[in-house]
Image 1 (cartoon, rainbow, N blue to C red):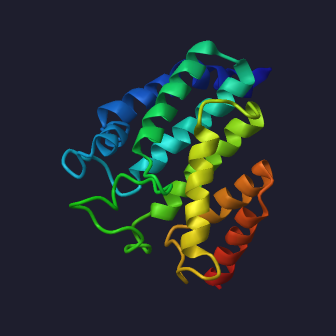
Image 2 (image 1 turned 90 degrees about the horizontal axis):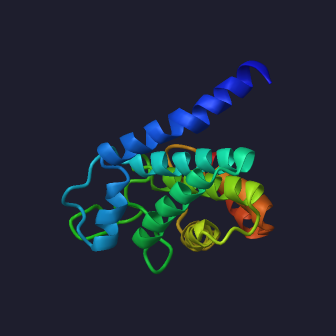
Length: 197
């Protein structure tokens, strides 16, 4: 009841749709379509961290779906997840700014590139979905797991001794590890934190 209930209702009925419209018009959602079509970097729009905004939107949708069980929000959530899934590389890599011909190589601009930061927000979206719809068949859980497994391979104890310049992947991995019961994600989060000093 009260103030926060009204704010939640506005969020669910107006704000989320507005955000989705802006993600489309600004090109940040279409970036995933370009990635899936092999058309990057031509036409990519937004800053290096714009992928994270799509994941934050998915997280917000997941919490609202959990609160209301709204069928339209569920449909929109699944449609966005399909677009994200289509852009994921076979090894789990997922980013529209790096890693393809004509773009910077993966993991080469960790201080400012936000690759790991973006994945942290992907993990947070998957956690929100798991907490509100455990075992949902939309594919987000698998997308996040494949990306997290890649992070563990690339940056684990025997991998790159590096960290992201913008903290977030640590929180995302820790929450993902708890939600999915995967100790290796918690261990990787701890390793990143230790590397921060």
